[in-house]
Length: 629
Image 1 (cartoon, rainbow, N blue to C red):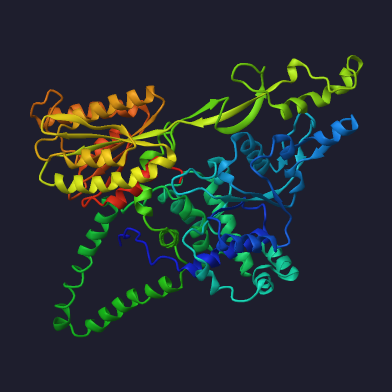
Image 2: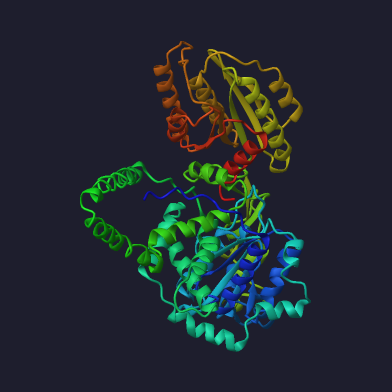
């Protein structure tokens, strides 16, 4: 029988989503460092505070690592205050060493600098703090991580290197205080009793965890489900297996159950999904249809036989009964196959996906291949303003300002050697100087290429106008802008240069006529020229094409569908070579192969939208702006 494409079942009830969050707390108590930890996405509010309060009541050592911590405080190094006070070198243990056999809590984990993420991920992966200039040997430490992701939907989340190593991902944005009130109606003491495992139950669960066995079908189903959801890392199925085993140990089972695999699918696989599960191919469906056709043809030759030999009829019936009877019982008693488990986990993962996730998965496929454009554009280093970066050695002067604390930290270990030439003051040399650095983000410009040709142009432009208004309302905080290129007839025109003015955009969209041919190549050429000009100005361009992809006007403004498609493919390749992000919104009544091919050529995300909806299009464009969200 041919398998049907997986379809999302009913969404998870808020109470079930909250129960999964509580189960993650028990897994942290059972195996704090076995599955890496938890990545929690939730805004400030009662729901997150209730979860953090329960986390603090588990009785596990919890060390908070703020984003402003330096590398020496994280990994261990010089105690600067004590060293300056006593005049002798004093070392201090790092925060990662203090979190041994416990948890590391990372508030605002999405804002951690790469300089702090790199040693943290290395220590989490290897189970030891890497050696520093003050310690020649690594220090063993085993800990789990609770990363608090406080980013907005249009902002990048936790770093990919850290998030990949955290087994459980939780998203509590959709939960309200009334949703969790049904689970917890008592005081804080009853809350702690419901979540925290008793010493006896914790000991039994830890003894049961190494004895939980997973069959080959379970592991094959985990890998197949991860592959179907677009997860290419082998670390994720391993973490899912570890989480499923921990869930089974909590429930006192020695083998994995459907509930264990379902929990792993909801909390490990579903949040990492990058594509919608593919439908079964034609090769799989053809044999099934042939079998269905051949099966009903076998019984008809048997009915004519009973009138001729009445005695053989019971034998034939008995034989058919004998051949059919053994079939159903083994199917009912047999264990589910790897394909059945895969379908079950994919269905559980789809049920846990939040609204609009289908559009997010479709637009994320093209956006994942580009890294030059982001939420607020490209990043660049500066010395005057922006987000502070770790200081680096250098001489102050000009626009480079001295970093006093880093300079003193570099000079402190060398004071004993410089005492012979000093008068009791701190001796500082030029080699100790450190300068401040900042990270600035360039603004981004959204280039909208609107297809004003055809009979449906008025409806498309009306919906595009609504989407532009929604985008411009959010552009001021990000310092982003919008540029509109309209194409119809035999030309493409710059309808609206780069602007953040909502009134100006409304006026430009109102006076645009519709009808005529589709000069798609001219539109892509103009968009490419505008992107090059914006990049020279330090602005990151992002292209959004709103068209059905049926080009019929060449670069010379002449008719000819074949040459027009060739010209459009050529300029699509040039856009892909530029490395900028792009989104293709297909406005045809049915997904068109030409539009999909052009999107692939441009390296753009493809989103079919027969009936253009301004709110939906605005959400899709925001996902292209921030692909990590």
